[in-house]
Amino acid sequence: MTDVSRLPGAAHHHWDWQLRAACRGADSSLFFHPPNERGEARDEREKKAKRVCGGCPVRAACLSHALETRERFGVWGGLGEHELRTLLGPAREERDDRDAVCRPAA
Ligand code: SF4
Image 1: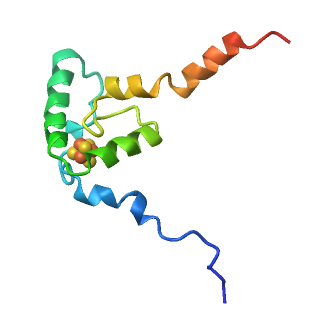
Image 2: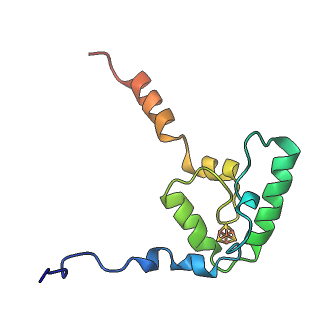
């Protein structure tokens, strides 16, 4: 018989907050922008999404998840993409580029 005692346990505690999300069952296009959406249309969509987040009982867990997973797209925890990116700083590729510039020549 296979010994599974050393395998990690169930990981539902990492995501079960999603079961209580105010956006559960909502149209995801409210939280993630369609291609080429800009300006006022994007602002209005994000405002509507943030209103849903405003009454969400798991907002803190959602934002924490977004920051831990470095989520750069969509509305998470009541924050839009611009706000998330400000908190997260440059994307990995941008940091790598910056590192390359700062690296001394061999
Ligand atoms: S904070 Fe907003 S995006 Fe996050 S689970 Fe709640 S309603 Fe959904």
